[in-house]
Image (cartoon, rainbow over all chains, first blue to last red):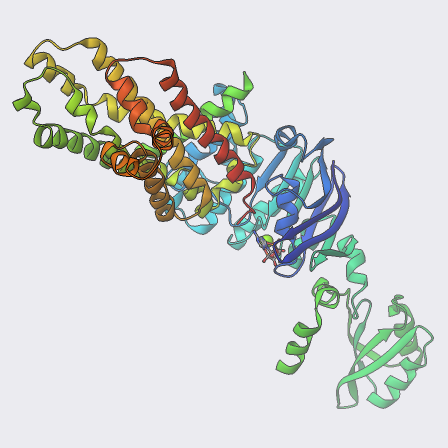
Length: 320
Length: 247
Ligand SMILES: Nc1ncnc2c1ncn2[C@@H]1O[C@H](COP(=O)(O)OP(=O)(O)OP(=O)(O)O)[C@@H](O)[C@H]1O
Ligand SMILES: [Mg+2]
């Protein structure tokens, strides 16, 4: 279990993390989201004990990172941002080094290194030096280092950054399966990834948590949650008026019309599902519904709603 | 013991990283060539016809002042520049273990270079009948001296992510510690400074302690001096690493 209690970090002239608190249980995969510079990396560095916090504390499996850092780190596998690794070492040598520091005996070291090389598809580069690796292979090498000792807590800073689509799928699969009995905290800018592998998402903006929920629940906050896009064989004005009269409908917009048919966007008034009502109304009128799509909201939109600071929003509006 | 395990793993990695790059070979060749050139060309080793290694060891403080910082500069600067320090210091290791591991590996490397000067010893036996005691204390003095320079170089390396700056700072610090006891300079200073100050400063210098040992006098004070310099620089390295803010 990882408990983060009111962590904060001040850099000279900059308050990067302002009182972040959360608790992650084994079996949870926590996605850490936020714009560039929000404080994700800084928070992770404080959990792993690389940076001392200016306030608050972090507990990893009951060990306070500040007072018992070595015991806490034994429980952690950490993939730092940009996947640092010793350039002059071979992939195999590098993994053996981290295994040795972690106190694995000779035989076990060899077994674990072989195992992780196979799991992370590093066989073809095992004797290559890290500095000659492509970005994706280097990322996987550092990822391998983090999972080698099968730690109960994994902290992964942008684990799929720089991977090709196949490898992304592999790494996501690994995270999902390891997430069943481990605590996993990962940061990412790929929101579809959060929906694919995270059981929970925290959005952090300028050093503060602005949302903490399941990806599904976050999506519900989207403007387009349960919105219906309907292509119906009816005159636009008439259809729009008919649907607008439904009690659960908040608004109707006409997207296209012509040939006695139209495409409408129907907005629920309070996020309630309205599909049933809309279809029944169309049915009663004898209108032919040619295409129906229910929008389940986009994490993207929610992310933007929650994190867009004034000036960024302003610039985006001007640009469009 | 588990504490030692971490030190050994870090030391092993550091040691092999010297030999995985050309640094080690270049360093050893330059050290051997320069110590030979200084001894034979400037030191008149043959002409002196003395079967001892005084002229050989005489140059070591001056060789080390440039060469040891070159071997020490990457120890922490490179870790900071490439970001591997984040990896190293989040492994289940204390910073003290990491520092000690690196120091021991680098020192072992310097001692290896020193050991490779053994043909000098053979030459003195060929020339005459040297005193094995002073040869041994000479090597002891040189080994301790390189460790002291190394500890200073490690400290400057922990202060910056730039190897060149680390190197220059280490050379300056080394020169300072050397020149405090350099006779021509202390004579000059003694013209206007009180004698106790001159002597006090000279006692802080590498030079006097090195020369005492090298001449065959094993004084506990000299040994304690070198241990003290190394200990101080390593503790300061620890403090320097603790105050880093990450990037
Ligand atoms: N060592 C440091 N000294 C000063 N400021 C720092 C330092 N490290 C981070 N910061 C600042 O703290 C803030 C948070 O940085 P952090 O790296 O945690 O962001 P992030 O959320 O990981 O962003 P990204 O998505 O770009 O990785 C930034 O404004 C950054 O400039
Ligand atoms: Mg980051």
